[in-house]
Length: 177
Image (tube, rainbow, N blue to C red; front, side, top):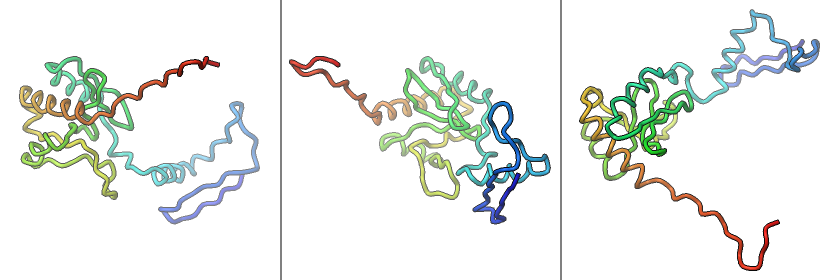
């Protein structure tokens, strides 16, 4: 098997080819264990986020859902290494790095700003910020206050949701195929 590797961390690539046949599943053979660290580096540098920052515990997500349960049936769905927080099928929060972020718009963003909170930025090296803002630690400790913030976030999600597309109907005289 031949392998070509460039040593620059930002352009680390590996090209596998020839030499050995595929295994029973049709996959190329795994390289020797001594090559495994190179593969780890390839995986880390080929993705646009840090692996260590995406770890979120299910226990924390369940705790958040329990604290927000006075709002209704709050659920957390795994997504992109974190969790989306939903009420009545509408996402109004997200959990990343064991931190709760709630939906903000022009009406409720001032309460986040006054508390010194910041927006969710999925990548440290990119300026993109999403419309979810970090919930301050003192709010997380007070159930009634967290529910008030959660309700404001759900209202923001209602105001900013996109309308569902209406299915096209057949015009008169046309039959379905």
